[in-house]
Length: 440
Image (cartoon, rainbow, N blue to C red; front, top):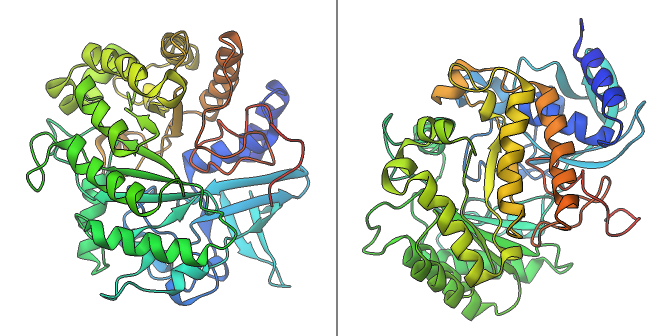
């Protein structure tokens, strides 16, 4: 193609039913974006909401490799609008890549824009510093450290266990840098609490609730690493469940409660429900049997793919199929040396998984794979999956939902290009809009 611009325009022409906004968004998510110093934040002392590193690094380099972006954090997310492609409002999670052909920089008037191959392709908006980030807990910890918000303030992301008990090459998921991200933040001297205290979480939520007068924060996600034995004397359901129980007792009905955990036995899933969780995310990561066994060795060893899928279906009896939303990591299907070598094969496999779950009324969602360089798959595949794979996945995802008469899943904000706030993939941007007008 000769340039990234030519590749992007070719795909927009070939797949006209996929929103043009989603094409750019997927390319930014899979390959990252560079930041001119004029586009970086002043961390927690500035006017822009900085990147919180809420669970994974989602960067294409380690902190020491990011240069000034490691000292002055980039914004948590950016919004693309306008430009020669007349882009509708598009919220994109920031994944830093100093060598990306995309660059965010200010022009001579100080107005931020996104540049591709040296050409300005859109205006860029950055999230303002929320009032609740300007207040600290009694012990001095920041709200951003304890209860960061993403998706333009829609979701409070509570990573209450910052490491994973699947540890080492024989257990860690091969695309996941949760343990490395913990290590690099500690090495850099940043506050990065390993296990968050329930009372600290409640105090941070009280600050958010007090100052979020517009009620922009609508949901919270409880998540963290897998617990294969016990943590603080609790199994996984009780550990994550105790946070949900405390939140629901202190803030009944204030937020939609979601939990990301392993696919657990039915009795454990019932405990989540009893604690007040409304949506359950037992992520299945990758559909293909061989790739699941290779890429998720800990999950295969402790649970196994078939049992994992059975537990997902069983959990629908507890939560209702619509409220079981397992995630997969879109793009790892094509990771060398073991993944599919053609887009056709990868899409066929992933669509098989979509049809399996959607035929039972369960709507998966996905995160666009960011090949973090400290992971085995990221190291071997620095370019990630081809952009064409991601665009065709959006097309296959929407078609499969239509085939089974399903609508956008709850707890993700509004669907539709120009409306969506879900920032780590374009699946919500690519679904039909509920309302014709954009959110404010």
